[in-house]
Amino acid sequence: MGLRRQQGERGMTAPVFASAQEAEAAFYAAFENADHEAMMAVWSQDEDIECIHPLGDRLMGIEAVSESWRQILSRGKRMQFQLRQSNLYQNGQLAIHSLYENISIGGKSQPPVVAINIYRFNGSGWQMVLHHASPATRLNDEPGRQDADPARIIH
Image 1: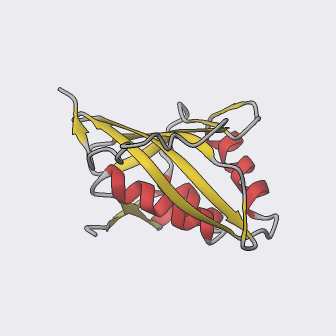
Image 2 (image 1 turned 30 degrees about the vertical axis):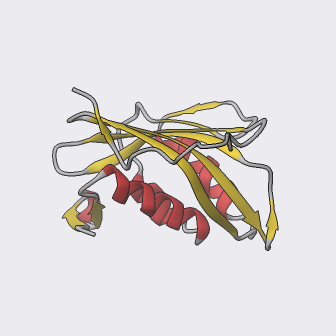
Image 3 (image 1 turned 60 degrees about the horizontal axis):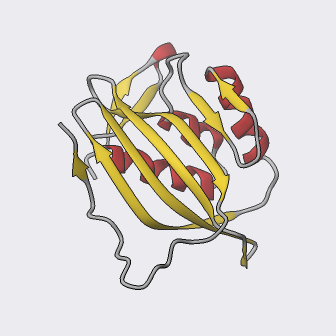
């Protein structure tokens, strides 16, 4: 990975993700490790961010998004993710990832979740601007279905 760090507010360094895929890997690693600080390092610090958790309301802005992750990650339930059937769409400024999250909590599999993650290039790296997750009615395991190409570039 080409992870770099840049000087941020209050002299702290923040990670710079060279690709949307790096930002996504950091997002799920922070989720699995219940690391609020690492989670919020993935998110843009702009006020136009949004997050919709499964069966939840639309949360807008840094404060609301951060507090929701603080509550989720503080529950003490360790989650493991297996990501399937990712479709990646990207142009020079935005990357849209559509995927299934197969989640295990304490070794027990949960029903699949369908997620959309959107990342924006901020001039020096990629950051999340939207996470929307909803319960999936079924996993799309059609015969002959292959996972999508690693990325589709949209011009």
